[in-house]
Length: 169
Image (cartoon, rainbow, N blue to C red; front, side, top):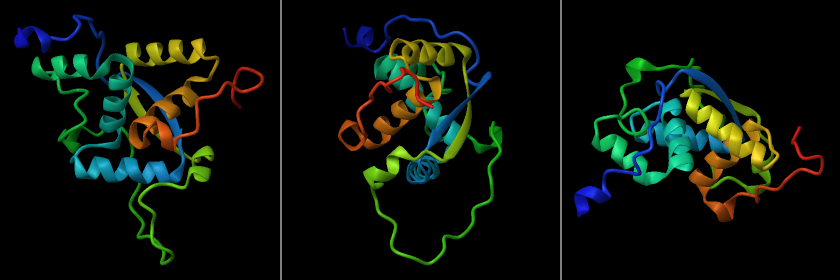
């Protein structure tokens, strides 16, 4: 019985894990969290974001089933940095100043200035676009909310509200 429970839902996930670009705009504080987690997992920022988006769309159950079958494209852990699919800027030492907070200030979460370009499967991008459209949001706004709530939890992120005109700017 437990063997059956680990086989996933049986849904098929078409296409290569990294075939189309997706840009996710994040607050700088959240970008630092992504960078720190990617470093701790010995993976890339893109692999971590793909992992978060896959789990957001299809759940941990199907993610586990993929990994069990040997597909580690969405695992988000220990992927070789030899296959980096984005350009990475050099790290600049931080300027002296107040200590960095472990959690970002909630007020900072509304100002997204750091863009992360990741490559995802066409299916993931389309499924995200469909969910965004159902909520009358732009794809980038929906993807940002999915990433931020995964990293910080629902209680730390402002609710996903529909802008007055139906689309954010």
